[in-house]
Image (cartoon, rainbow, N blue to C red; front, side):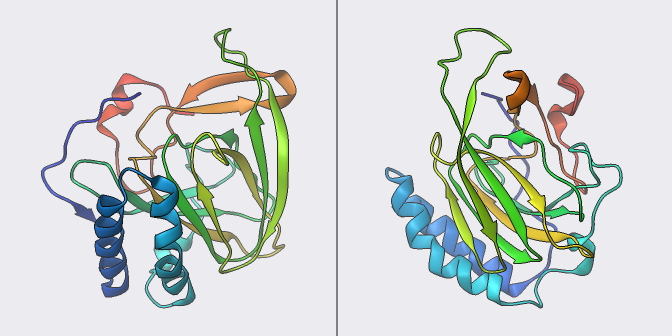
Length: 219
């Protein structure tokens, strides 16, 4: 697990009343349900649904691809909010048409909701025990077709490993992620199922640095 330095204050990258109210709700509910993350995500879902249904709160710049993406494929990972203790982040993930994320995990509870466009998500399960460094055997659990407003949970190890591609032809897909860690800055795992391999990676953010980047190469 990556040890992250505390920030001086919460960081807001989008000045939106809707987002600020949602984050306040997440903080309250996540504290009340800290011993049961299944309850956390289920309780948050209707509030997240309401946020996804509002189309005016996310500025256009946070719904654009990023040609310099550390994830490759022009994928933009735009930080919207980060807690001072780095225990909560909200970010948008923008995947251009024809692009697919690497197969990766998140290592934290969370919710992901599709905001614009359409996606295909392939969910994996790890079936080895991690006995050999650099080796991981995955099996496909489910393939889901996602439309705006669809939400899925991340409750490691359940549903935590996936790859996502945009299926709309002429516009990127935009998903909103609510995660119980500083997802872009922690070291996570990137998998190549066909090679049965795994390696550490740090996805970073398109608009905010990670202090930890100097200590480990990005994707």
